[in-house]
Image (cartoon, rainbow, N blue to C red; front, side):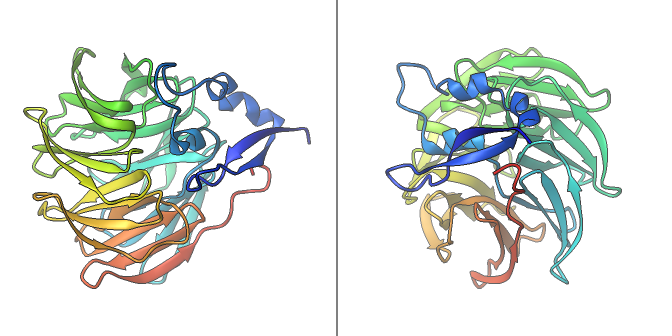
Length: 356
């Protein structure tokens, strides 16, 4: 088999980056969009892209989310989506979902569908009851790592390395419109509560778009590096953002004003969740930690035991009692929020040899 070697940034925590080779089948190279890999992911007059964004171009992520009833965990690692029964801690089944590593998972509002996004430039929609592929959405010209369903579940937004946000009609699978976020890649997406505004995260800025017209309404500025996560509060009044600058920011979505900046992570922040009562915000980071915050005051509450590697994703159970976390090394943990103790641990298989 012919192979092509790239450099993968494996250690994003150390001040000096450690470069190791990736091995890919020659048939997969065209899907990686080497033009985008070879170009900086930022304008020439801005600082170098932080390691998190650089690593995302060349490697997949370990992702975790609960299903709607909270009885199963859904994980993604490399090209595979796996379903786990929480009662037995056993695998139920898995799907070889994409041709290249998966970068994002999200559930539809009704819990019936799962969307996955990948380095292979596609977004796929899966029926969670049958676990069958419903649609493959094509049109992006680079990796896709940000996806979000509209509140009514009729639309899906996606974005990534081609610096565009695409809005999809999920009935037809066609692109309704495209938003250009030049010169920034799209790292995060969410809709507002009404579904008439789309919010995207780029390099240090957050863009608010009119869904009906595709026009940019406003920008929220304050972060210094790429915005890795966006989260709407349950009441729809606040926006939480997390970035490579080690901070979490809480915004008044109506006025655009900054309410709080939360500091404590030693490296970039990767993921956010908030409970329904809006009195607990949880973050994960490149510093191998999971941190608990009070979103109304911005005060730190606690830090869960340090993990062996970068914590890439977190998810709250529907009853808000459990937190799931997934790490770069394939470790998936389940935490009791009442005791702040780990109650279950899974270890996902390492990526397949023909990828790394």
